[in-house]
Length: 279
Image 1 (cartoon, one colour):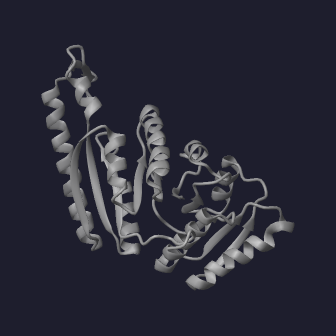
Image 2: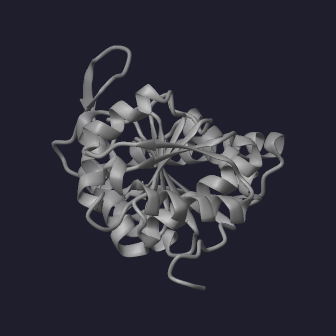
């Protein structure tokens, strides 16, 4: 494998926990697995920190309907976790059967970050749903950054309401990661995602070299592409470009100066569509 080559994607990890369940993320993950002929491996993590909290004598919860305050017992949380895991597995089984996708489901207990990163090392791509309250979203942003840094796997980010759909907008800065992102986008386009739109983050006078490199990849993959030039590429610029192009899926390199994992973390939620970060 060369430095630019994209590793085969045979196993996609869908990371789940009690605050991270979404029908939309399941459907989008299955759609990606179907297009890439990959297995979808779901991991439901029983959060050890939450279980420790439930065991404390002063722990309470609010009823979702009544808003009544009542003691939070660890036995109750254990049952809730088992029910949620069973519900998630049943939903995956039904949806994967309809989509004709290979699947697996595993429950693990421990710290969410540790368990997800361990599982990511055995997968080729990781999917995260970015819903929930601000605290949950902040924790997931941190987990995304750590997963990228430690596992070096592509990461699919799914904000609330997002789905994997065309057109694909790819940021191409000429880096090895950008080549891998473009190849992955071309694979999606070849599986029915439509023509690609390639965003070159350079001044028009300097775009010829980048365009030629991107065109070589597209020719090799036999996929057409349309080019856009955006000299200044901040996270806000990228979000505006995605909205202007009505992009359904954005792919971008997650390494180097263009979008480091830290900057990518600040990007989460700003683009408003499915986003694939490719290291």
